[in-house]
Amino acid sequence: MDYITQETISSMLKPRPKDGHKGTFGHALLVAGKYGMAGACVLASRACLRSGAGKLTAHIAQRNNDIVQVSVPEAIIQHDDSLVMFTGAVDLSNYDALGIGPGLGTDEATAFAVHDQLLNARRLDIPTVIDADALNILAMYPQWWNDIPGRTVITPHAGEYARLEKAGLDFSRVTLVKKGHNTVITAPGKTSYVCPWGNSGMATAGSGDVLTGMILGFLAQGYGTAEAAVLGVAFHAMAGDKAASVYGEHSMTASDIVDNIRI
Image 1 (cartoon, rainbow, N blue to C red):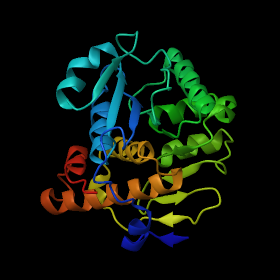
Image 2 (cartoon, rainbow, N blue to C red; image 1 turned 180 degrees about the horizontal axis):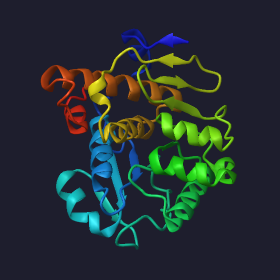
Image 3 (tube, rainbow, N blue to C red; image 1 turned 90 degrees about the vertical axis):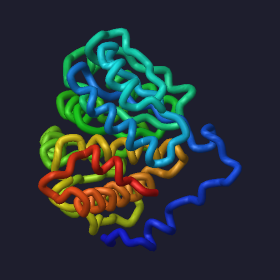
């Protein structure tokens, strides 16, 4: 197990082509935020775009429209049939990566829609980052674990990890980002990494949503799951340290982390 270093980051980060356009850098789809949890979608969306994705479509409950549209004007907005939750899988034919889970809730209709979405991503081999309530749904329905895409990153915090582990799920075929002090990234056939950066101020609501958005942004640009996870975790932690240097660890918020992302 190695610590992430600046050399690690430099070896993974691709140069940005001078003649690139928004299509060059990928189109990400984010499925996040039931009504009342629009902030999860906002934070993940902003972080995805800050991480270099060319385009982002946010699939949201209809009642979240104004919040997300105003907060992230760069995002394309796509409405679910439901006013208040995620209920129907999206066709992924025009997307390069999927992020799913932040603030979704675990209602039965949402759970079955998450399953359908993951099956769709698996069928089309779309790289996917699964977080938050999508992980909780998989812990509730462990028989769906074998239906997740072949190229998957999961980003559980300690509580989510415990639920997944209790459900008997096998992490050996996914890239696992186990969040916490000194976040650990483990991927099949790859060196495992520990993040040396970060601080207690990052233990704040929405911080994980920011990380999900960042990993999604790197996946959309064509990075492998392990590389996207390492880069997402590293730049997320460094942004957190920059935010703490300005606001202090007691006072910083997840939005401060987004504002300090520098790739």
